[in-house]
Image 1 (cartoon, rainbow, N blue to C red):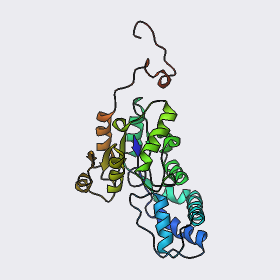
Image 2 (image 1 turned 120 degrees about the vertical axis):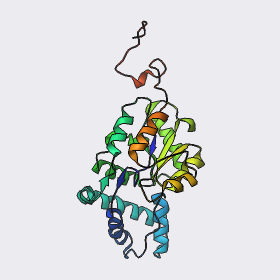
Image 3 (image 1 turned 120 degrees about the horizontal axis):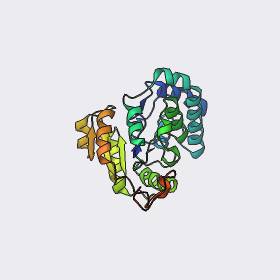
Image 4 (image 1 turned 90 degrees about the vertical axis):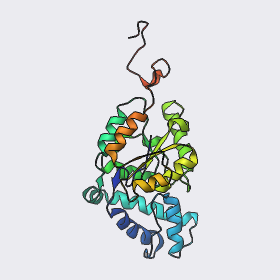
Amino acid sequence: MLWDVDHTLIETRGVGLAIYRLAFPAATGRPLAELAKISGRTELDIIRETLRINGVEPTSAAVDRLATALIQGYEDARAELAGQGRALPGAHDVLTSLGANPAIFQTVLTGNLREVARIKLEVFGLDAFLDLDAGAYGDDHQERAMLVALAQERARQRSRVPFGNDRTVLVGDTPNDVAAGLTAGARVLGIATGKTSLDELRDAGATYTAKDLDEAASLLTTLAFEVPRQEDHPHLYPNKTTTNDGG
């Protein structure tokens, strides 16, 4: 299960833009006149376009400086993010319920920088439900669709269970999320918790749609794969032993 972060699990409610306005001059020495469109894009893509439209050559050094400033900005703004932002209704419940199913491996596929995603999820207490080391992030690749295979491989390494496209569901709130999953060959649950309507998510080609996280929880539970048998995947059941009498 690959979760998007912003407007799927959490909202920063303006804190993210405020951080960008502080980070940009810290990294470039000039004010932020315009921010690139951010919905459903990777941070590398956003950073490069933002630098370009503000008259800064998007060299590797310039991109790295802005990325570093953004990470520090979120670190410094933890209290503000906690007070002004929020975990979306149902976020804790859906992650908890799915996390209780040993057939489901949950991580993230997000356009956020790795450290920014970690900070956001920690601030709202969602990190405990997700294996963030298996996730794929906006500083891994500029193209979002390329992140799916990366997350699948990291999840395989972490769990020792292969995750092909038939065993992968990406959950996101934008047409770009849908396109990334479909381009990679995975199934996509489009969730109308952001600015995109259910009809727009369906038109984008989402395999499934849900109006909110409560509805998503019910749907994702029905999509969960059969719990793997202990004898097939004993490492998933470290506290159990197999007996000959079926116990």
